[in-house]
Length: 227
Image (cartoon, rainbow, N blue to C red):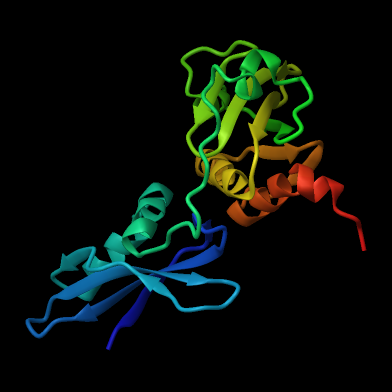
């Protein structure tokens, strides 16, 4: 019978748009070794998804140690091995040469996508460079995130002796894209001691909270009547 080895504190948004609680489970073999795998449990209900065997360890303590060291990137990639896939393949954003996703035109009105202002307050000068994957920062420096859209650096407000507030503009056009973008933001920011704001509102650095804040800025969500 399998045993719960470790439950990860932060959920992930899957490619199907669902939010998953993630656990490592294990089982002792006849030879006394322990095999481990990853389980994804949808928070809205439904059957769990499990990978095949991900590791084999000589004892339970080593299995628990293996589970405690798994990174968010590993857990995100293992989702596919567990069979968590998009119900419909998400449409990739248009190529960068397309006017809809041209960083130089990101401030223009786009009817079928959203442009959201994101602010990251941090003492770490490397963190904003990490977000746009650049060695040096300059206004207009951008990063294309496959399946999500683009993230464009928009400058910094820095006061001496206080954390610098770096601004970014993110453009994306669907619920799937907002989930992918949320995953990347959470992966880069969690554990870094930064403060995150989306359209001026403080957002907890939590995958679900970031996704909800971004998804709420999509054109359909903005235009929906309030009850």
